[in-house]
Figure 1 (cartoon, one colour):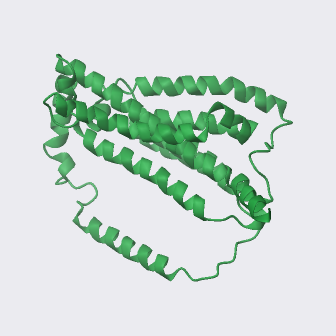
Figure 2 (figure 1 turned 30 degrees about the horizontal axis):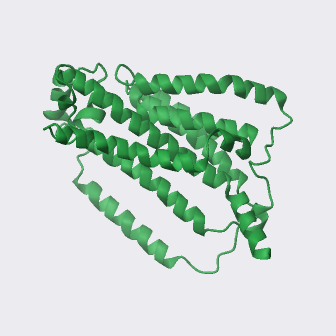
Length: 307
């Protein structure tokens, strides 16, 4: 609850600073999906700390070296509020003055992230996809303590007897999904886009799973489909850049996608935002289902070992 309050408070600060897109992201991630994932993590925590048989010296060394390199890298950054910062040079005025004429999108943030810096955004989507793969890899090799595997699981929903909660959840989820679609396709004209829409969509599915249980939610959307969708989102994003190259333009240059450059920009932004939303929603669900389903997986392994 405190994490959700902190996320909403941070979002209100960004709204006060006229950074509405950043506030929207903070509200959907900090106050939304993060709080739900934290609740899932708490349910998978045992009553006592699992004893470690070795001292993680190597991990400590890696963390210290990485932290030192990151701190060293900040020495080249401009001072906070410095008038000589690159953002106050020619780049920002050009985006502000020429974005509408070149891209034709009212929301300058979308034109920068999805068009001018489309290659950077593509890298961020790849990073999110890689994080999902990392979660799958780590959770497949780490065993849960015995007291955790015998404790509560989302397969046995704690809210089965809460009829009002289940009815209210059924009423809310369609509106949450509809709002996610609105955010997905309205990012050109207002705050939003594929990232925020993907997080909101994933939050709706996670809410359904927390109230009705994992088994019920897996009948709605299964694990292999989610993993495929995460990869297809990245592939779809990259394929837009490949089509741009084949049409004689630069990578992720949407102007060549249509005879009218502005229409091409609109089409390209719409398509890559679909890829972003697909990957983000799928990775969030991959993380959730693998965290919440660990008890079931570990119990199946123990049953096989016993036999």
